[in-house]
Image (cartoon, rainbow, N blue to C red):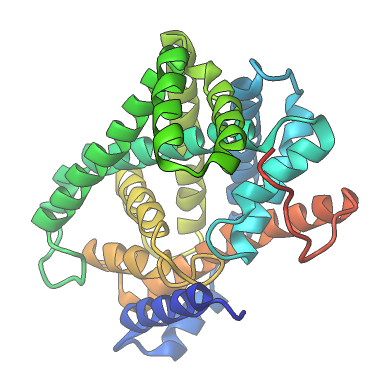
Length: 334
């Protein structure tokens, strides 16, 4: 609460929420939420948790070179990570799940964090792929809908793709040529860092590189990519199910576009739980498809809660079952 980053996130979320709900009749938004057919949330949440299980399988697959850990053990740890991302700022859940994995299975945090970073890069590539796949849809949207202009979204997507694909290429090369990467890292360590921390930084680098072993085979990298596509298609399916609780309908491809844009937007600093940064682009995109602002807001807000609450509750349950304490700091990156 005392860190300035927390308050900056709160401010950004407040601005996004204001822009999202500006000019709307909030009573109509509440009416849309009250009259929603809530039973559609059941299949939506079910398909979402299938996606979380696939995420756990993907992480198990990436960690195999370090240690073979069954997916059933990985699943609770992944949910703890989701819970951490949803209630702590700066995606602290990623470090939290790495710390829990070390506590349970003895996998070094620096190595497991390498796999987490690779996961996020693959997620970003697929999200941008969703947007690219549906760029044609953007040309159908009206200019006064509140969505950022088509050219701007194309530019953001292009630069985002360059960044994510560039990062992926760097990690692939580091995985395929670990000795060369280690020598390059040692050069910078020996020339830029004080003597007293060089050895520790070197050891961390070696453990980090060990977490990239799953990328050394093109087949392994393709498996991770296709698994990531399945994960995000399952999440889009949740968007589709929740849509049926409201009196509107857009195509599955439009929901893929929405999924891509809102999840890319959540990389911006915000209050815990991605408040505002998730909602504003989702509402704007749906209104661009002709959905009334109040219905779009009701849908997006309910979808956000349905994405946030179940996984956070389950993660909190597993967190307490692990015997962990709230506010306890993760271990050092060993």
